[in-house]
Image 1: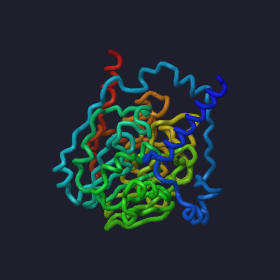
Image 2: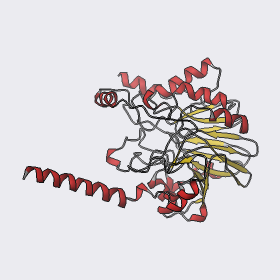
Image 3: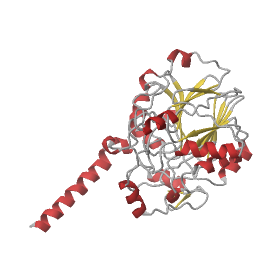
Image 4: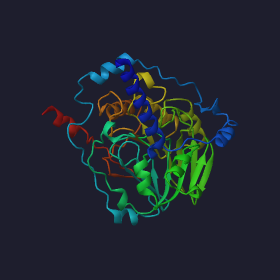
Length: 373
């Protein structure tokens, strides 16, 4: 009877998990059979999966991860709520067409104003980057610079891949109705359609493909990463970085990526860049081929021929085992060594492209000092 009960419980758990995976809308929609047939004609798709330019295995030491998970680490998260700079909606609406401005929302989310267009990059406004909010890492800040409901009309949403910390179901649903167009790598548009976005608004691109949005040229460029929102859909959609080339300003967004030769390829083809938004956090030696170390992010920016780095993929969530301020400190140290300028805006603080001055305050040290008290 005990054996039968255990089998019944395991069976019930399997049924519940299966129903959750199939019925919960946040998992989105995988590519269709017809799409996979088309993808199979591509160089970067093989055996039903998208692939990186070079082999990129994760060499995970599960015993080491278990020890990290059980280890007391007081500086892995800030000890208090991080305050943010509030955005004035009238300032956004009245932004000069001749000024290019970036506003960071923490992690990898940005509002970009360029050539009179408002573009959201990887809009993740949720509290946790997880399909189950109770199990996800909590956002460091209780507030956002501006709530989704107060945002003005957004001309374009650009997505780099479908991981939860970059493509957020709740954010996409709230943005619906105030976005002109969406731009995604191959396969990611399926999620948007599943969530009620009109197909005619969605543009899907492969690596090295480009598309014009009035005066702005968007180029879908390679990254070294992977994708997937469920248990069995790894690498079934594409991941990418983006080049955003306006009339006078040229911006690079890394998405998530390990260091590789694609940075120099992109720099040679589309550089120099006025600013590079570069991943520097949530790294680990076990997955360094898929997430850059901070020092590599500096070298990648040099490869890109970038004039300025804005470090991203930190400052909002703890998704790895390093202290929460290690990414920014390490990238600053390496940038100083290599004479690469770095801007360090607070969450919500504008960065104007082309200005001779830009935010450089080490605002995070306030929270470190408080940790010592």
